[in-house]
Image (cartoon, rainbow, N blue to C red):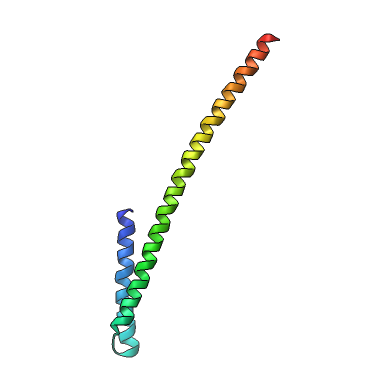
Length: 93
């Protein structure tokens, strides 16, 4: 995980703390710590899920790149082999 991703996850958690606290005190006049804790847990799990998906997508992208490189090499080898065979057939004619 990159530092930027961790910073954004931390920012999500801090912002939900401030948002829930201010929202509760504005509309109900007092803050309920259980609601704030639940909001923190929800946003933290969401941030971790997004980071996990990002990590999985990076791994998939690397595997696809490796397969593409391998396929490109195989196609190039096949092309060279076909060219060699055609050249040998031309020489025979």
